[in-house]
Image (cartoon, helix red, strand yellow):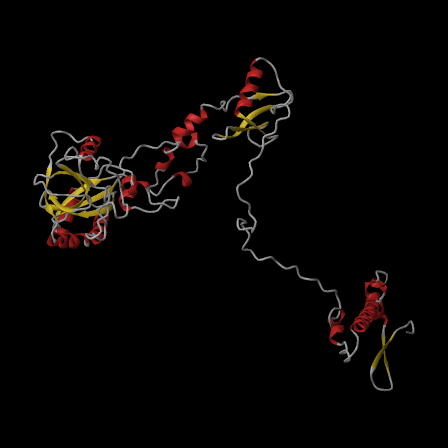
Length: 443
């Protein structure tokens, strides 16, 4: 398996990439490792550095290297620290895949990394983040239209690689001079694309898994919007774009299967004629081979779902000038598939956390004693009084109370009743000195 260079630490006791350790970035199983004899021997090894940077080096000293060993390799200038990710004849196939030229410079593996080499490497790696922040400020002060996405120091700390993104050609000669004076190291600038930047930084995709470009993808293939059309995916830029602001690479994974399945379905431009209506294709279940037709192209009207074989039968009848009575065959009904699970507890409801609003009970107009005041004046029941008798007493009191309120609800007394009487009342002095209203009616 291919091991990776972790950004924060290097675990020598449990090397990542061994058969007993966990899988990591750009993993590959060496399926030639169990070949007996020396047929699997090859003097080239693949070494991986920070994130996705890899290189091929010659084991000229015949060191007993295994996948996961940390080695010091030749660099220009000095040496670099990396991890062996592949050995054996599989490296030859990998070099062929990488289109490595025969006249390319082949560098050597010096030795397995010592404790002093690892100390220098850790010290250089600790400077990467601060260097990236400072370099961004310097590029901004120079008014350069570029973004420095990552910085990688060489194992011995004598060289730094700056990965940047730019939409157009950038003249960074002045930037190199300023960076060399600021950090006192040799500067190398490498331009990368948005996909490469996402692969180097890493992250979690909308599927909940690590990004493909940072976990296993090494070659980036162009993705077109036609891949989304073949799969009947809505052309929503927010849904189709990944963290690199480009089309998601996973759109190409299943597009070939969709293309082959679409060939077995009738074209979307073909209209089906019946005696009553003309149907156009509204939606399609590609792998289920079910097609839904509508009488209106823009609005779902008179929807009929038929199988692909039935659609071809209707098309053949229309070519002969025959219009069937219905798209469905005689006595044919498309069975709807029942879902494997049901929402029994209501956990799929969107409003399951909303509190139900209680309806407030409207009180009748009048004094507060009309609704609940009478209850407060009820006498407490005597001890030993039967429950049925108490209930009857309450019903009787309630009846008297309703009789008292009855004139207020009488529509005949609304205009000339209580209010009319109130207007015709005259005060009269009683013997006790209290004002008692006296009406003209003599009540």
